Image (cartoon, rainbow, N blue to C red; front, side, top):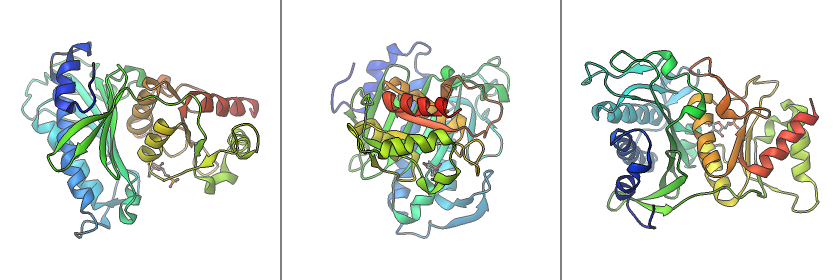
Length: 335
Ligand code: P6P
């Protein structure tokens, strides 16, 4: 049940009973994410004012220059979820291995693990383009009362109990699902409250926007090249418009509202594409499917992929159902 302009807190309480697992732990987890997002939002919004830009001089497990805001966001989300004693483990793009959270929970009674990309699109920070945080939540599969293990994190996307993103854009929004549709909440920075601004978000079945880095065109598989040429043809509702922000959360969010497809395919330069299965593709795929959209690697449903490594990459095609299915058709025909 939702009422426009309802606060996030009211929404969580009113919809808690629809969540099939727990009394309040997941609600407390969403609340901790909401708090961390406000803190990170404050820093993102003033990044241009203080010397927080520029690489932290370190490189993360991906071998990428670590922006100070990456480090800051990572620390804030881990700290908030740890302090609230809600999760038993956290995996992050910025951490080589998963973190076992057993600070106050000496006997590891917490049931949830969270996987997070604390600041996706961070290369856009210096040029004042929207960035985002992406999170994915699972129930642990190893016995409660024992330290978490890698198998608690290497779960198929269909096992997610919640997923969402925060977009730090012209306004800051928290968009998430617990398996009962997708709802968007906009932060009123003046009072620090989130309000239900986008209830029951749905991907239009069709769209006129395709999002892909065409600078990689010559490296794409034939099926992707054929689909891009199809998008550019003058016929019916085409040519489509190309929009690529270089920030997954921003491109996904726009496509969900207006209709569209986002593609980060494999290429001769990146045999599995660039995006990470566990904390980028699976959470966005859960949101997409809950919003009547679709997410695949070009051939297989993203959420059915059996994970093998914490930071593994997969090709990613996601958005309006009919557009994703057309792209998959081109991929199959090119086989
Ligand atoms: P490229 C940001 O680094 C990111 O992970 C996504 O947010 C974004 O869509 C993509 O990579 C951009 O990658 O190679 O096109 O610059």
